[in-house]
Length: 148
Image 1 (spheres, rainbow, N blue to C red):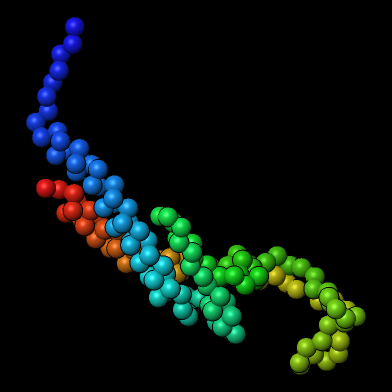
Image 2 (cartoon, rainbow, N blue to C red):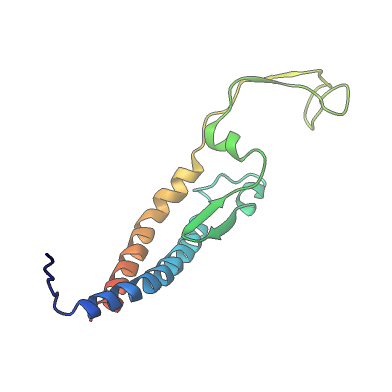
């Protein structure tokens, strides 16, 4: 034995669901692209340490689907973000180390380590309110487009 229940406006509901996937993806993709711009706006001193400018200049953005990757490419970026433990610095290409201002060349340096400088956290903290607003706008746009 079988009983059928008919739902009023079921076709309109199915049409709205089919439309929502297309609308949602497009709106969310645009919001993700906006996140990259927001992060870029906040990737400036004093959020990012600036000595030579190399760290801040190497930030890149990569968007894939609904994911955005934002970060620097210089090899010392993690050492700045997380700090370093005490370590020994040895010459790579010569027999000794020398720099402007040194009294004489040395065979090694006992570096005391460096404190963490969480610039990524500062970038995200500065960006968060605008990112939240961007996604709230995206949600409202989706709701407006899929409701009859």
